[in-house]
Length: 382
Ligand SMILES: *Cc1c(COP(=O)(O)O)cnc(C)c1O
Image (cartoon, rainbow, N blue to C red):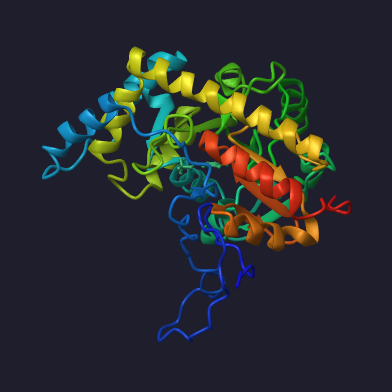
């Protein structure tokens, strides 16, 4: 039986059953005790496909595995606390100083650090909804208040409404482009117009976890934002395009005082030497060329999958990440269950829709087979 009650608070849980509330033996922060506990999603059945976490389906590159093995010879030592070598490499690439780069244990850790640095109890953090599952929990942990602004009918950010939701209590606005889990991007023009409406002392986190998969030329691109808007920090990750989800390494670029504050809220030594070594190996020219060619393959597969789903009658929004969104409405849990029976684990957000990662080539056929037959697309899903 499919349990589709509470969603996990990180982006990585899939189906989560509401736990029996066992009272804690000590006094906890009530808002923390009320958070849904982390639950790992269902593993894919034998021979099936795990398309629930937007992971990269390709095996790690041999050169990266070698770098990890070499780093393994030094695991009796603490890592470099600031991941200097990796920051140096990224600084060079983005044309900034090393102090304008921060590396974290995944960009989720960095999101947490920035929110903790800027938002305290009584403060508000504004973001689009539905968006990345981790945002609400991170805001709650900081003791701040989430203000969620509904997506537009096309499932993209409603930036006018987000700007209108900003008050003198707002400390952080999160913009996720492409938006996880729905897929649309924010355009560069939209982003500029949006920034012009915001007070310049509000921190804007531009979460670009999927930027390498974007092929839309009007899209916002954090690289062109750097240095022009001191209140904007861009966040990127090695987890998706670079296939290092298991090692936990992401980075952010922005003004030094903001990054220093985020360094102050970090749990020390979160980025391991192994993770840094893998990231550096992935940025070697030959390795990176191969990784980005894989991204091209995923992009082609994504566009083909979306076109086929549209042809089947599914109202799939624009897909600019490594995933597609099926607005299945009330049928969401049922569609997820049919997919599971066919060996595919998707990420269901009942009663809104499902996010399906673009994975192995052979998964596409299975998806189209199931989604073309089992359930009529819902018409009332907006
Ligand atoms: C996957 C993802 C991240 C980052 O994940 P890490 O593995 O922590 O780097 C950040 N934001 C969004 C929207 C994501 O989907």
